[in-house]
Image: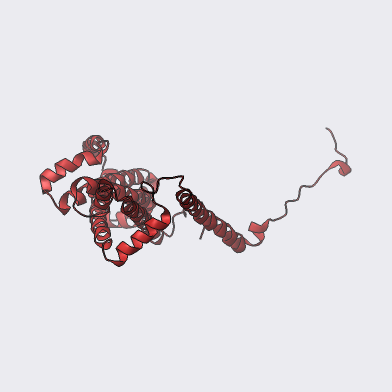
Length: 286
């Protein structure tokens, strides 16, 4: 047995850092840094775009300066010409999103709970899932004719698959011990859903719903470019055909803002509905 002299022993001491000593202050500092970076990067890109347009590095007939786009958007909004297109797109997205979320969640819950239903329907739904959703627009036009029906149906179909997959996967992944505990205590089907299936699956379901929110905006804009007489998609496509590129970029900016706001709304609602779920990584802890 080898002995070590006491004078050769070293003691490792770890002193607490700022996050341990002042967690609230460290979190606020970290959050301020994240917000600064999130604001600075797009702002820098806009400034570079403005500089390129001012120095004639870009053809302003094709790529108008951000200041021109902002001025044109302000004028159209003040004149009331922009809001009808924004509202047309928004109401289609909301209606289709609500319908797709409700049906996707109900079927995902059913298929996740009953293996025989899953065995019967999953191959068919998997085959339909890989079909590009815009390819279904002619089918919906034949079914519903011109108007709001095809647009809403296309958004609902797109959202349905995202919510269905996330719901079914979340229910299947619930540990069997949770279900067994509910059965031991004699839980009714409603109590099993309310106290076991819902809280265990809802965080994953809301992740799929948040992804679907962004995709819904993309789909409706593409659909409006093909088969609509109003909406932001129609505005973008029609202004490009008339070579009104400043108006086209106004529509693109409105789509981007609408998509971000809608996705953030779903995220905030998800946090309110699932206070027990982990917060989004990369957005700070609150």
